[in-house]
Length: 437
View (cartoon, rainbow, N blue to C red):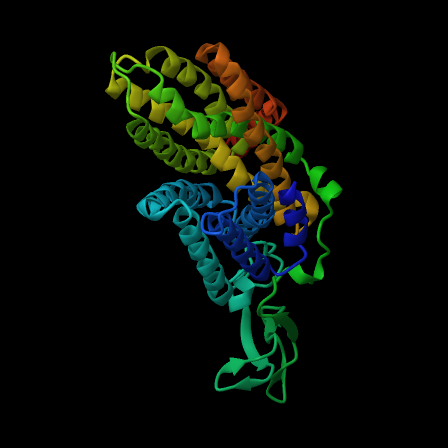
């Protein structure tokens, strides 16, 4: 629930300040959880309240960072770039486990206090160095409209603004001179055909307003953006599968004989990280494919449907040998986490800058929060259901996961059909142009 609220704030507040506030608050809550070790606190209510507060602070993270990365990269390569960038989630999981384990011998409290201090320190670093948008450092926005309507023959005439030592402290403008005709009469040595045009340097050449001039998109309006609801519901079921593996895979491995032998809890935990490794590959691959095809829904649905036989094979043949288990586990991780990573990053950024918003990018955080927040409900539900279903056997758990993956793909059917029809139409137009030429 906190993520919905955080996304609403993210499109209305300075993302740098919001991230800093969230990280420092999150670090403080994690540290408070660990301090219960030294304070000798044994009340469940204390740890429950601290965890809930930590969850609220952590909810500011994902909508904000996706919005920042989306501000910097355009749509054409966004899938691949965000797929690579999204690997930080798996790297963070691994690093967090290693850091917590390294100090566990000194008392379990250190496993919370040390990561909490590190998170707060990174929050201060974000405050000092994060650049939220390209415009903040003088680059053009990735949401700038096409500049084809601006005449090509332009030249700098003068620079307006208070300039000292080559630096301007105010928004600068450039006055360009446009030659409207090939030949012009010159009177008193001056070209009478020249027309001056003032263009702000840090603003789109084809736009009359900046990002800050637009009003932030409301929560209900963001839900109505085409594609938001289907992808949000799809992520509900995708994260249900992914997080069930995240929380239950070590337990499943340790209680399933592999090549006739049961693994220790430590070995099973280490082995389960290969699922995350496959997920990293899947996120990058899904992003790259979606960029090449220019089809996010087709890519996400294809990965989701392919994960169904992968889950079935892992359940049936994962116990044959260690090599087969590892191979099938990484394959399942790639196909399960691929669409999950794609939807939470590139798809969220695309929908947050949808054409229906008419250039208004102040929906990025809200859209990301809606999609990932809805997915987080599934992430909480999946492990909970597994606890009840696994008591009757693991076949029921895998049947639930395969059904969830099928529903996730099914929810994208309308968008998949629309993308296919669009590609068929483009192919027809292209063939007609070739025929005419």
